Length: 335
Image 1 (spheres, rainbow, N blue to C red):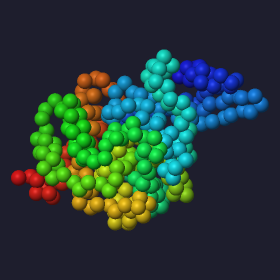
Image 2: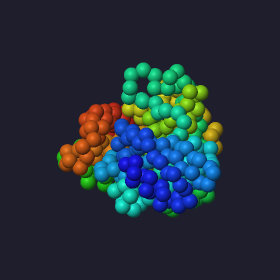
Image 3: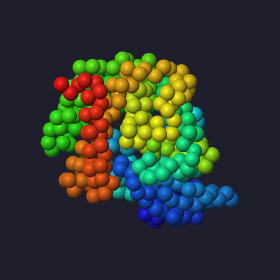
Image 4: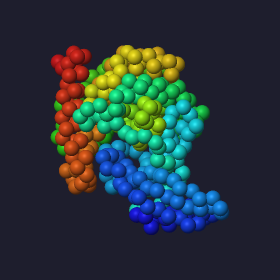
């Protein structure tokens, strides 16, 4: 891809000369966008620039349903805020350059934790990382999405009813992907509709996939970049909290939930509604199951040949269906 990226940068930076690109490597393991790490060098007059970059390209098939350019817009909107995100440079929707839409952003310092690997994913810094994790999520919930120009996000003009809108969305995704009716999922959805949660204090920016593995941390325990905003939308901030404490990737391994919620409440200026959180926990199990159902359908049809997609359908799908049944039993919803 080196020569094609050089051609694109020359197109976007007509004043630059001596453009060179190397060290292009795909970062495997993601299940939504294709991610490439690269190094680019160019000159503008007497100034030489040497920069490490990330290129995010739309995949042929992935697990996340959304518009590719929305992630770019979220990064732009949050630039300069107290939510750490990489700086973005170019968004390209014309497939002539790299076959599919993509955008280019800075490579952040730090590394991801791997919540599924054995051992400590945060090198003994779990407490510090978890405190930063909850602080940044609280800051995100405090931001007025209209003030930063994110009305275009899903539900961006809504004021209430987020639980119903989101439940409809994921129910439709399940219906489109499943080859066999899944009674447990259908039962959970019926229970969620019969028992709506309390309304949120205010609409909030919901990351949609805020969890271990979707941020970078540094050797001093700081979170340097929150990534993977493809499912970002406006909604109830309890949705992000419920996703973050899901037992498949729990930050509660590193800090008790009570401490995390206290940090979140201080940063957000809101109270974490425990009743709403319980509703969103079951919703999260439905949402996760919908994603794994999509993965299964994508791999079975041959649309995707990525093994991470297949393994997600097998391992995570089984986990969340079992977790969903546990949550329903706790709520007396099995009868």
